[in-house]
Length: 281
Image (cartoon, rainbow, N blue to C red; front, side, top):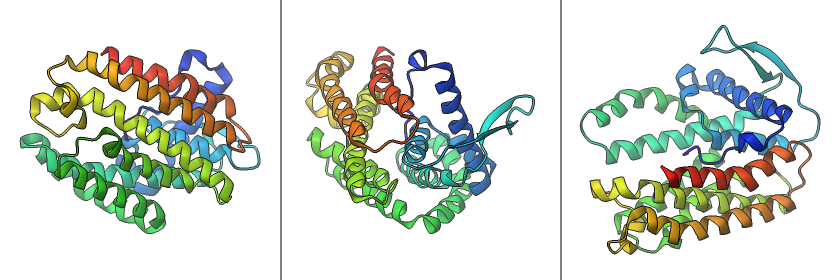
């Protein structure tokens, strides 16, 4: 994933930010437990959101404890005492990372490509374990990658069609956070909106570099000589706001039992802050 689904830190209360950090650190620890120490380097805010969302739908109160950080032994972090529930987002992170690695192997050249080849065996093993434990996630992500590759190989020029596989992938993954059918429908809608947001924002951010490298980018077909930044602000910004508004409506329909202020912060403040910062770069 891309790290676009994150909080607007200035809008969080201190206690809310501490809980968010604790979930982030707990997911990091669970990745290390399940897939080895190198898997911790793959942690992103997107999967922290997934972990927080899954926890928010469960009954009971999560308890935390302080332990030393594996990467900074002099620092103590808050962790969930029982992080077994985080096995799901950890598996999703590893499966998604593996397919991103394959994508990089296909697109990159030279030393970068060699670097990806060298680390591939490490993450191949982690991917096999994650796919075995969570075949539903593997099926969703594999279908997404196949469809995305098909669209790119034929040079899809339709923005909605190009963004659909990412939306469907997030819809499928978020659906697995609940066994309640009504909640699953809402989660699918939330996931689709967030997936579309991620795809459009990433395409807009990558546009200048993709134009330089000659790489596929669905936005390049409609650019027609316009400045990339100006085009993104004019064409993509309204669509991002639509995704955020629809995601907010879906969030309000979920039966959230805890952490709602943090989830509200991510959807109502974090998404907007993130894309504005990315566009300003």
